[in-house]
Length: 74
Image (cartoon, rainbow, N blue to C red; front, side, top):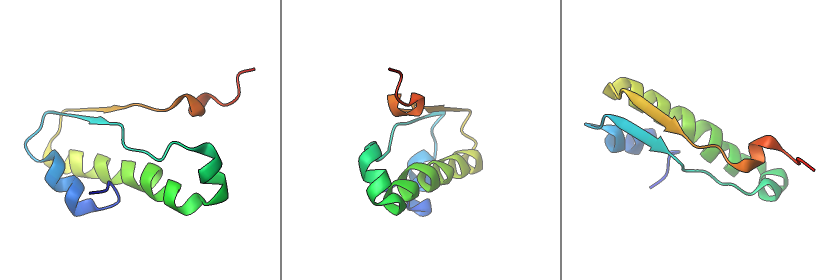
């Protein structure tokens, strides 16, 4: 399945107290070369999970960002 499917997200979070969201397409190079799949999975997928979690009454949502969020640190 995929976080890009709102119905699947709703099914996945039904009856849980906490969501640990680690689904992503992590390649920066791939996201630059072909941004739509990365946006769909990373941005829209996260939104789908957040909405599903809120609708299901999930009390905690943990999102793990990648080290790429910090950019080049050297």
